[in-house]
Structure formats: structure tokens, C-alpha cells
Image (cartoon, rainbow, N blue to C red; front, side):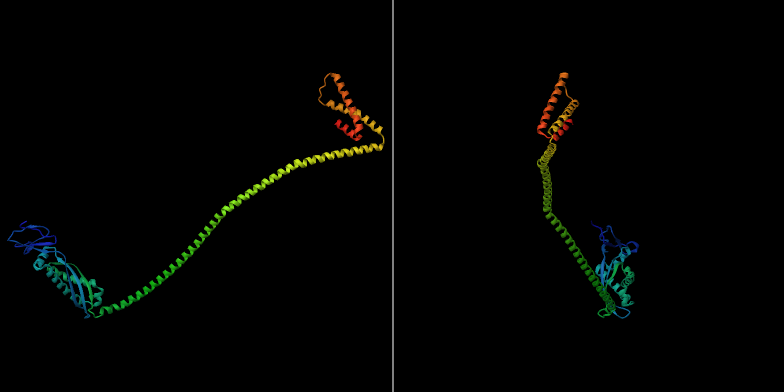
Length: 371
């Protein structure tokens, strides 16, 4: 818009043609726009951005040793109105180049002055102290020209090929090298020890692995052998069980056959032997009786003896009939008939005994009838 100006965020707008606040020769506007009367006012802009100035200065220490010092300075225009007025009066035409050149000159002078009051050893050991002293010494002059320093850093310090700094560093370098060699040897020793320990652990692991593999193989072989023998062992057990059952069956058959033989052969033989024995004993007794009778040469006496025994025989028969449960019909007549039959049978029996058997046999028969 015609007559209305707005500065950038990193700029300050300088309006000449009228005095500014606090007796400033021109008006300063920062951060906002403003109407400016054309032809009667003139507008210029001053950069407030950060600038960088580098310096490389040859400085001489208190020992007379020349040092080549390189540093970098970060600076900008101050944010207050008076700093902007001072910077605008000095750098508005050639802002960056003039600002950097003047800043470098200010810092170079203070750097030479402070380095000249220190030794090389102090400068090397206390570089931060050197930078702080240079910054403090330059701050007042930088403020008078409207500038402020954000940072001052010393980049490098060398002795311009005199060898002094290297000589100072030699003992430390040697010490560091010795310590480094010791540490390297210790590290090598530790590495060797670790390697040996690793080898031992590996050997132990391999040995344990081999043992474990052997155990597993042994168990596997055992299991395989047992599996391979399981079939034959089972078959052998079955065969053994079959053999045992067959043995029991054979024993049972033998026992059965033995019982059969006893029943079929032994028992009949024993019965036959007993019968033969009884017959032999009877025959022997008859022969004995006959021999005795023949010795007496008394047949009549034998008959008389038989006759004498007949009543006793009949009596015994009658006694047997009396003790037995018989049912007699026809009363007394039936009893007489029964007794007549008994006597008749007894006579017939006596006749048979006289003709067929010896007196001893008769006695046995009579005795049996009596029983």
C-alpha cells in the first residue's frame, strides 16, 4: 500500500526525516508496520540477522613464541533502539561486509593483547579462559557500535612450524604412547586370555557334547536293540508259554492215562488176583480138611458130625428167619410149610455138602448161614 511499510521479522525499519524517541536522529520501527509520508520521509531497512566473522591472527606469547590463532565470531545488531541507531549510522550502506570487517578488527586486537600476556602452556591448557577474556574485552567496544556477540570460539592454535607445541606434547605423547602400549598389551593379554578361555570353553562344550551324543547314541542303540529283540523275546515267551501249557496238558494226559490204566488193568488184575487168592485159600482149606478126614479114616464120624450140625444149621436158619421182616400168609399152616421147606432145603444142602465138599467147607457154610 502506498506510504505503508512493514519490516521483515529480522529487520529494523529506519525512518529518517524526523527524530525518534530518546533523541534518536531517526525513527526506529521493529515488528510492525507504519504509515510514512511520501517525499518528506525516507525509509531504510537494517538487517538484524546473525552474522559470522572469521579471524586469523599471528600472536606472540610472553615467551616470544609466535602462534597462529584462528577463531570465529557470531554477532548481530543489538535489539534495543540505541543499538539499532548506532548500527544503522555505521553499517546501513554496506551492512554485512563492513559489520564483519569491523568486528574482526576489534576481536583481533583484543586477541593479540590477551595472548601476549599468557604462555603457550596456559593458552593450550586454558583455551576457554582465553576465549572468555577476549569476549569480555571486546564486549564494550562491540556495544558502542550497536553490535552484540552471541559466541566466540577459538578454532585452532599452532606454533607456525617452530615445534614448540610438538615438543610440549612429546612427553605427554610418549606417556600416552606408553600407556597406550601398556593398555594395548593388557588388552592383548586379556584378549589372549579371553581367547584361551573361549577355546577351553569350546573344548569343554565339545567334550560335553560328545559325551551327551555318546549317551544319546547308547540309549538309542539300547532302545533299538530292545526293539529288535522285543519280537523274538515276545515270540520266545509265547513259545515258552505254549511249551508250559503243552507240558501241563501232557502231564494231565499222563495222569488220565494212568487212571485209565489203573481202572482198566490194575484194578481188574487186583480183583482177579484177589479172586485167585480166595479160590486158592479155599482150595487149600478144603485139601486140609480132606486130609484131616482121610487121616481119621472115619467117614461115619464125618457124617455123624454133619448130622449133628444139621439141627444147629436149621436153628440158625430159623433164627435168621425170625429176625427178618417176612410176611407169612395162611397162618400156622403157612408157618409149617415154611419150616418144612427149610428142613427139606437143609437136608438137600447137607447131602450136597456130604458129596461135594469137605467138612471144613461145610462148617464155613454153616457159619455163614448163621451169620
